[in-house]
Image (cartoon, rainbow, N blue to C red; front, side, top):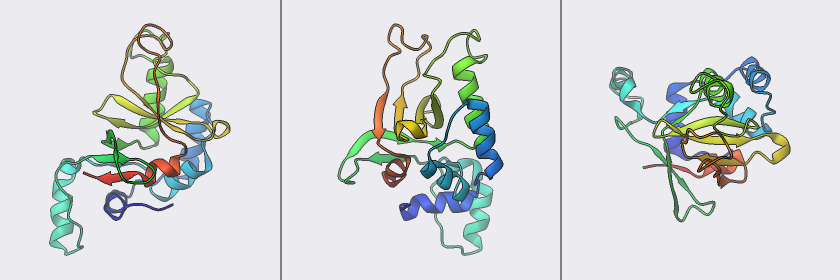
Length: 183
């Protein structure tokens, strides 16, 4: 899986890779089969925050130790089209860690966010990241090809009123990761 060098720096610095048990726990808690490319990525790299302001002390120490990595205080990663020539007009602030995935999934599909009945997005999708803290990137399970979709926050029950839209971001998780570029 090819990662942009600047994106890779964030993952290597934060070192939040998942264990095999983390993957199993997610699959069990969310009744979801993770695509192989997502499993491989999560175990190798894990979650990441592109907002590095919370890491300033560590960043300064790392830079003082001449590690050669220069992180801005805050940035997002933009998503480019598969050919890398134009922006999709979306950015991502964070790829979730294991606990964030489970909590976000349960909160949005059968949890305490509203009334323990309302489902905000289809339960066959897994939240893997966010944009602006509330809009989510969702992963389709292995039988559905592992597409990555974008869901704009909406607190209507899924399928009603204006909560019916999911936008296809990429046809696979690997394609999604390859499209990330630091702003």
